[in-house]
Length: 161
Image (cartoon, rainbow, N blue to C red; front, side, top):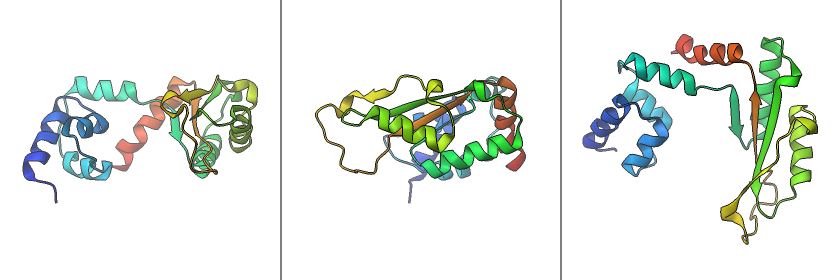
């Protein structure tokens, strides 16, 4: 059980405009986002805070799970008429991984051509450290450059909650 003082401090930080991750870091605790949502669901945020949060909402998805990426893209492609030229991908991986192999893997999952991939990002903290999970495929970040679609996607949580 989380102490009431921690919840009060989290609410103060949220009212100051901090994100869930920033609040967790400030508190020095790993608090589930679902807990934050429950704590903050009745908060009335300032217009400036709401505008900032909207501007931070981008139509990108960063996840390591290939099934989630494939589902997101399938849904996006079914719900919108997309210009496939507007997709870009970035693979983020460990230093000892084969970048070309990872990019080929993610290109197959996303159906986005390799020429639409940016240069891979290597986690510098992993230099000299072997990858322990042989099935780890890094993280794939997908960007779709459309402000209209980004705005629509940012509206979905408001309709649901």
